[in-house]
Image (spheres, rainbow, N blue to C red):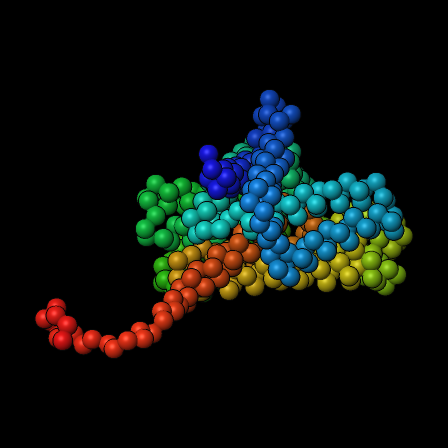
Length: 428
């Protein structure tokens, strides 16, 4: 096998491993199949993808694509996280958290280096949509049998989906992707049916989570997708079906919990967010530049919380979480990274070949970030995968645009130019 073919094969297997990771991220087989728990499939698939990608770069002596200022900001953010060990309130937690962030950074860089064509982008998004069915069924089943419900009525599942808000946020991002596949007329009917099922099950699971942030984020994401989709009427029909289904099938408790937004001071969960935001504000006033160290927000709670806030919460806002743990320096890095990824998805929406999928990705990003205003999870693989796909979409669109405007320069003839009789085929 020649070196070029070997590099292409490694790149292809890196793509397969990355797609497998996206599926494992949702299906979480190690969490509910005891025999698979020791295999650590998420770590194996992501590590294999990153390793094969790096081997190809080293083998071909080509530089690693770091994704410009967006990627450099993420690398700076991760470097600052590791450096926060020196000033962290809990260095042990910071070390463990920083290692996880470095893994997520590697996943992001692997995505932007491996997802280099519209087909690969569509396949990975499709894998996420299909695998989300497993998560949704798990959530719905737990709700119907009443297993381990939060507050007695909020559904959740295993692993990273044990938090209803986190579960709703992660399932919400696949809904625009699923309906985008569904709206494609050239998609096989079996695949469109699968996407319809995936979207319906995900919305049902989000409703059963009773997540107010998840509901708001999903609603905004679907509205944005419907407004920006070129087949406007078809998008509005799909959106209307979504709204009608929500109105008909959502349980009474779902609407009752969403109504508490207007009376948040009487809701313990809502007040927990208010207290967390107060803690973030006080940390920022005390340690504005560098915060209290990655992962140390809850350990700083006794020092900064008001007297009535006895229980320690997470920041419940990703941007305030970053400010509290890594200060305004960290927030600057994160905003460049997140804003650049979101802008990349919107920019790629103009591409003629994959604009339909980029528009779905941009809607997913908006919905996800809105959810993160109420949740706040720096360490979420779904976040970095989504941002990586958005960045990859822009890179693909730029490459397509560059190839379409490339002009082949042909030198002008130096001798006399022979005229041709029109239609004769002979030179004069």
